[in-house]
Length: 286
Image 1 (cartoon, rainbow, N blue to C red):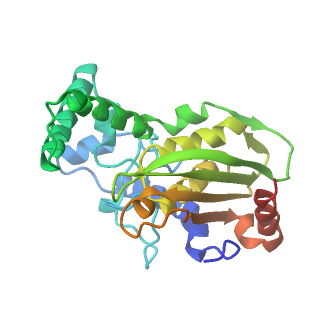
Image 2: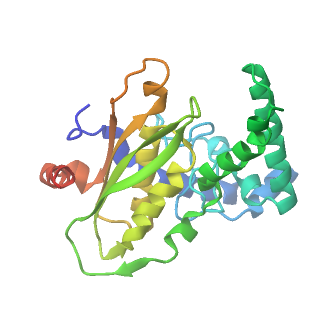
């Protein structure tokens, strides 16, 4: 797929999020809770920025064929985590004792893996590997504990600037959710302000937050773009990512040197070819 011809579905994602939130609020007002679970849900705060509404089992906003997402499949995100998974909130709210128990459970699982591959988890070099790996994996997936409001931290400023803002060559590292092995690369993020600008470091922090989760590159690219769009409502957002996947270089097809490029264009970057071409020219220049 050419970078200059993005998929048509992406441009309506932000509008779909807003529409889904409105339907959820109207439905909750019209339908009184019928059981304790419904009553608890009705008391839960609703994320007003649109973060986190997705179809059940899908980690990015999806556009159904009929334009309607059933209420039962909407997942509200009152904590502003941005598309949380099933256990994300429990990890966010875990006590120190619960965190320690979680790591111990992971360490036990790693010890089992070591035995299954034919190793001796009791030998000196591997004795503390289960605990080290559990702690490392929690650190490498710390994006599950980061709230987007905290990441942005009110670094939104009124500014009369209507030209492109671009931050490129942002290094990222993430874990492929299919094989739990790393993929690494660089991201370029651009937007055209609409009276508001975002602190430059926040673009990198948004990329870091979503990359520190189990990911696929296509979803990671889209989540970053939508997060920027929702934060400051610019005229358009463009994100391009180029990465190398260890699941392709050290296993399976084993093709070292291969790279994967993904893009997400929103707003004027999608609708205006000259704007898109300017962005693509700028990220290629050094």
